[in-house]
Length: 275
Image 1 (cartoon, rainbow, N blue to C red):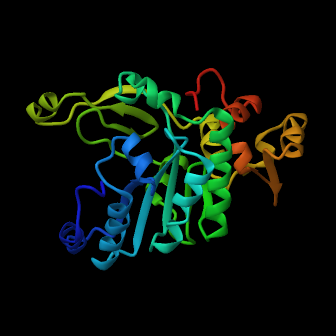
Image 2 (cartoon, rainbow, N blue to C red):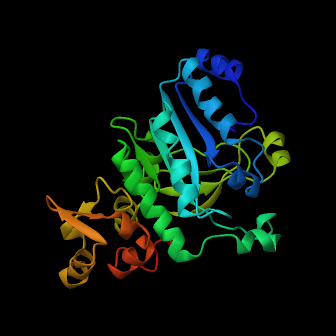
């Protein structure tokens, strides 16, 4: 939900309908950053939305925050993060900004120039991971942190290569080892008695499963998955991976270059999808 469009009445109604988890698109607790992102809510309204959800009976409340956004500094990040422990949040998704082509942001030169460079963005990510861990949010996936027992089962399904149906225009699904997508227009969807499926590719190869498992920073992959120890040792030595109880896991520093590590360790072959 968007904090600018919901209130206590909405949360009360959806809670009474049986929904027990809510994810709130906070993005930042800094008003200047929210304006730069074109958000319609303020930091105060974001906090109010979280509290309204709690008052309505939600115990499982997640917030999305964005990293490396226009005008963000280490100081503004710290101020924004400091609001999280004050709120009844059980889960945080922290995503680094990706500027997509043909979006308003991609066409705004001033805002593009206000985006922190890669080095600062890396520091912002590492600071976020350190802060959240300190306040009881354990990192269980590259972009996700949770209080104990509140890891998102929806997210984990994808990383465990589980099956899921895609329903609706442009939705994607994965059933019986095959990926499919649905037609991309509302007209096609509502004019068909049955939803059409378009085959995309096969999934679930050993390489893909290893790649997805490595994203799970609490679980990782069995050390024997990577047969070439000479590739692993430098990664451990440089603090990009750690080896515990026979499993290899990414460190926060390693999460920043996870794609490169996955390719370097040979976890994907040319038939596997890119990470």
